[in-house]
Length: 543
Image: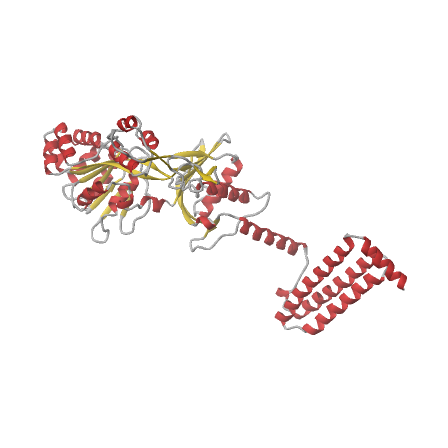
């Protein structure tokens, strides 16, 4: 017997993996038995009896393993004893509990457990979760061959790029020839996204439409919906979904936090303080029109809504007439321009709204001359905000006067005109200060003898003497946008000059009142460090 034990000890000592296998087996048995003990306690079954049985089985199993001189034979015998004792408990347990609580080991049960583990792993690894209307997280789809899982993965990839960079929109288009175009819009710049094939892109569109409460089967009609997401550390966001199709392509647009972007207050628009104060006095009025102009994608809708927010919808009737409702304002009567309507139909619909005698009316975009004349007439009793696509305030004024056809009526119906552009804000983490030389100051129409500190774009920070990508802007050098404005406020003297068609004299009068041209307002944002000379030149190129 002594020789037998000696042989076993020698074999074990000479082997590296055998002691490890013994430890793994013992550890696994202990983990399983601890779980069985908790189950015994929860079901009020005889704990001492079954714990004693498990310990006795373990003592027998490990004793035989040591005594039998053949290691692998002892291992299999020990395994049979340990597993047999555990299965004995499972058999006993299933006779004592309700069938719904019984443990089974069918293939279906095993598959369900594998799927549950995969779902839990996917939920932990997911960077984006879709939410129900009441804020509960939806299950993350899983499966290597599941197109919905691939769609969710692509949505995460798009949002993982878009959200840290404060993107405002994501566009996905799939053409009939299987070409895919995916663009993420960040501060007015388009960032193409690669790697999305046609099959996954269609699955992505269907996945989003389904969870946004839209009809997946209807691929032609334009539909809108809302999708709430939880992006973990990047917070919760609302995606305004718009999807449509044609014989040539499927298209989907996701506007990120559109409500927050469209509901900027007057203070945050970017108006310089003198401009803001003069406009506040105008917006307090109850009649006349205020015209807002800007090129496409330059913030005109945001400004219209900001002006609208200066009025209380509970003390006066407010109506809007819009191509697309940017977001719902509580207490405001929103009206959509009929899709595909011609100028006559638009004018008739707007006339109906004015006949309801609203206190405030807003029309998002004026394109028909008849509507201009209606605004000039209706502004005698109603405050009207109207958007136009022109270049600057004086261009708008000339178009307004010509379209109204009566210089006196054009003057009397008008209160103010604003023109605007959006410039990107310099990232305050990595912007670089510099002193411009006198020649540069002269080119910028600034006094050459003035000592100024301006800032330029960088995108990098120094870490231990080495340049690194800026963590604030992720190397873009800019973060967010702000409006720069040209504000023309018409006082009584200005209206007289307009009525007399004396535009040059009007220009002189407004300059005496310290009206700033668009370029001057933009340069004021360069001087205060908000943006750069390069950005102003880019935005105002040609002006």
